Image 1 (cartoon, rainbow, N blue to C red):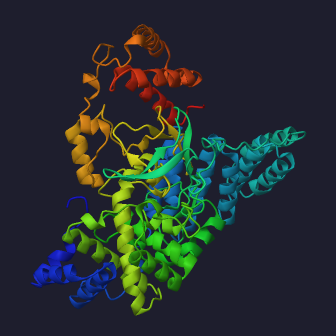
Image 2: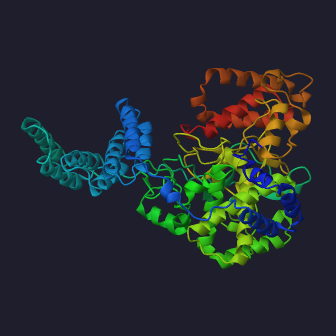
Image 3: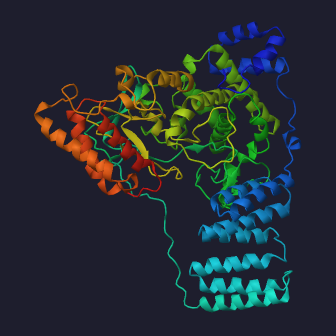
Length: 628
């Protein structure tokens, strides 16, 4: 079980006590999830596997020297004009600054300089004011007021810029500059003040594109999906999304917002508050831990109210628990989000009802009003798991992790009655199982996060939950793809190929038949995604790219009456693809869509030109620089 850190940690301790066999027997005799957790909790207490006190806060001290070192690396990137990377290091320096006011204020000030050169003037001003309020050295503060004036001037805020420039002159008296240097700077400031007269305020441009419209409007029961799709069930793939009419390439079939994020501790630009989660270059860290950053003070307070106040003191312990650190943190945050919203009594009632009620596959996750909403707990909690297929040792392992998480919460002052522990613990096991199965699958539409290092044994784990998007199954020949930049939490899914009425819509879990051999794909699905792929390329053993037919022939023509037309259009496409650069494709998307539609119904797949056209459209969808 090399997928998990320290998989044998718990069983080795039980084996040393010569009770492992008895534990497996007792565990397997439990009738349900709640009994399994209660049994595991009792075993771990009985054999002293659980800590009896919480000392996580005393174990870790933020080192200002480490913060200084990181800031220095940021300075090197700043000097090399790698401003985005410099911001990443300055933010990391902020996170590690601890109680050192000097490290904190210098990191803010340095980051404001990098933001200025990236023309992020509003964020630059925010960091400037934060640095001043945090006690930036008096002899240097004139620099910040000059930078603030420059930002305000460029934004067209003439009077505000004048005020900042005047403060720069006032604080210049406290600087260590020579008299000649002060005199020269004062003259420059006077010129800058004169230029502030008659400035016109710039309009704020919204960089987020929210103009996409779902094909046919919103689905009446699943608002994140198009009205032109429906849920159906199949023997091979279970629940899936199917077309109720012909869907063309480019049509928007899903638009979803995330339910929850579980960002890595190395994330330095993504707000930790689940109802925000926006990317921000001027985040501020939680003052008590290194695991949460927020876009502003308001989100920080909301994040604490959402549950970070409970997890903050124990996160460093939770990440040391065996398993996958990111998933363990994610499960803890998920539970606390719902606990703070529902209260412990209602939470336990909701979970117990889920465990004890038999629900038809097609309506699993729908609320009492018949809606499937990504923001609802029931939609997320009903996501697919492999609990029924897990081996006994994996089930015991997950239960032990859940016991440790709950134990740390209780040691940190979390109030829970004894009779509620089994329900809460079983819910944590279920969350771990959902995340274990879906985090890697969902990486195709996950939040993209700039990080300094990766701290998990399984890379490419998704960091956001989209319950509605999890309704899509995988194919090694996906006909749907996300579009736009992953730096936005909003996910837009577009048709990548023609999808006839009645056919299933598929996404990709990161592998494609043209790039990966069938045996490699099968190993990936078995080891990482825990399922056997039943898509057409896997069933028919489609070849990889270099063996795909490149010419029309009697073997792949489906309509001989159009042989001449198809030959002509294929020649035109080859000429087009050879003459147009990938970055210039956007104006020609309709041509590509029509070519795909022609080939789709008249030529047997796989066919080289068709696959090339799909790849070209996919590049347009997923490349942040593309505007379409």
